[in-house]
Image 1: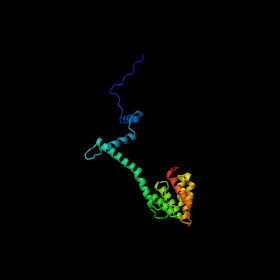
Image 2: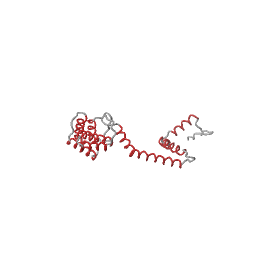
Image 3: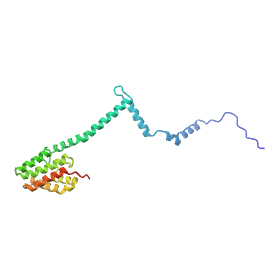
Image 4: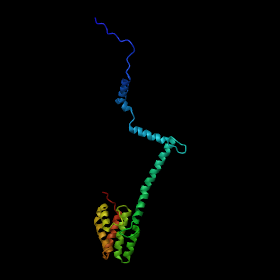
Length: 213
C-alpha cells in the first residue's frame, strides 16, 4: 500500500517582490482592465467640462458660469450669421465701386450708370450711351459678386468671366464687350441697335440666375 505524501509543514509560500510586480503588471494589461479605462476623448471631454466649471463670472462658478458661456457662444454665432448675410455683401458692393472700372476712377453704382446711359441716348450720343450701358452691366456683375473686377480688368475679361456664370448669355457678353471697346477706345460711332442690344443684355442679366461650376 502506497503511503500518502507528506505535507510540508510551516506557513504558505508567498511570492517575492519580483513575482508580485509581474503579477500586478499582468493584471493591469489584461483586456478587461484596458477596456474599462477612459479613452483619450473621454479624458479630453472631462477636462473641458472641468475647465468650464472652474470659470467664474463675478463670483459665479459652476453651472451658472457654464450657462453664461453657452449664452455668449450663441450670441457670437448669431452676430457672425448676421454679418455674413447682411454685412459682407454691403462691404463687397462698396469695395467693388471703390476699385474703379476699366482704368477709370469711377465710383458710381449700376443705377447711376444706367441713368447716364439713358441720358446720353436721349440726347443722341449713342457712342457714350453704349459705353455707359456696358459699364452698368460690369458694375452690376461686380456688385452682385458674380464677376471679380479689378483696376486692370478689361471689357473682354468681364465678358469671359460673365459668360462662365451665365452660359446662355455668353455670345451677348462678347458682342457687348466688342461694342464697348469700339465706342471707348476705337472711336467707332455707337448705333441705336448696339445700344438697345446692351440694354437688353443688362435686363437679362438682372433677371437671370448664375450657374456655378
